[in-house]
Length: 603
Image (cartoon, rainbow, N blue to C red; front, top):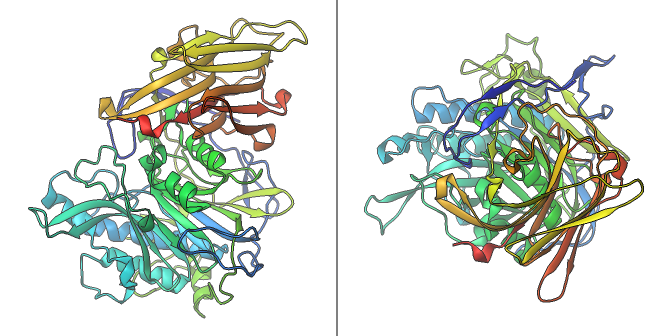
């Protein structure tokens, strides 16, 4: 059952969001049912329960990767990835107290991920502090941490416990070491500098801890969005790449980076990296840039595995995390609703080298620790994991954790199996959306066809960039309107602070003949119709085109319904398209989009 709650409101620029004011709505609520074994399963995922395979992540192949380039061999094995969608706690006695509170909550989720077989877990952007960092330098200081240079191979767990500038790092480093788990964490960094007036800079920084708790990677976000108190990181691809003991090389990126060439595209195209870990505070924008659309499209176009952790604040427009196997036909696994914190897990197939057979060996006491933490009946004992967790099974620092916790797992078998346990009891929240200004697009309505006829409709923008859609619609309902849209030019973000150059082809559902109503979801009741799109194509200047197919209920269309094709054409152009293989099953289309980015045309 799909429920909607219609409201209209506005929101301000935060983190990776988009500033303009927009109408909003709530997204579908999961229909949860209890199985005979007591597990809670969401009907939204339509898959039977499957327990994690304890053998996933073990060695299958022999070759060694090129650590310098990130190139991997054609042999395969699997590792288990986890990403956390998390609503950060922002109540506390100052910045450090907030960091510690959220770090402790992270550790609870890391324990659950490890218990389910995870090798690596990714946490969201601003998950340790919340998005509301102060603008005044003296006030932002308590929200920051000193991050050592990865070249020094330091273990923050060994740092003094009373060093306030590294306490958050220390907690997470100890957790990585005790759990034998890779942690990818985003934080606000305080970095000293000799050539600046203040003696320091602030960065939005991703760090990575290996299974020994060593800080092995530090990436400073290059493409900031409204983070005027922070400094952009340098264009050094090496700082955004790390290699694991299971033979997989990852690239790092943060939020707004996904719309730019550096660091992600450069890492994939020039360095051959096939796995990307992304922390984000992504604010949804229709019709092309909701979190699941952009995340899945980026993975699909580049043919890589993308791990994305988003903060959870639907009322602010922030939600949508997942694991996207773009190099296969496997379904993407993602969470996109208003029901609270979610832990998403997937067994990811990798072109990889031989991993360390001893990797991931847990502490001898870990099993009992996990059993304790996951038990709601144990309220007498306490767990002290290097002094970083002190949990009665129900609260951490007064914040209820277990009742808000939720895990979605995918384990690779003959079919995709998605399970949910510990379903969240969080109240339904509204979900806000930003809407792109479609009035600057060329657009044309799709007309009714005769029975058995496929019509190709073409449309150009600026007389040079053209799109065409091939479709049939013999039983068109006069109340249902679809339009073909085309755009070639600069788009402004955050009220004109940022500009990016797009080439876009779209087929959109509209609530009226006015193009600005296209893909608006307030007052939308999902319903099937007889429009059958065979393909959508465009002739693009560059190959960097990102495809997405979004249903009216804001779910991604199943991957087995369509395929993505890219061919170099004449005159240095690329003919790129989405071809629908099972037209009859795509009956609730909201937005079919080819989103092209011409990076070199950005101002």
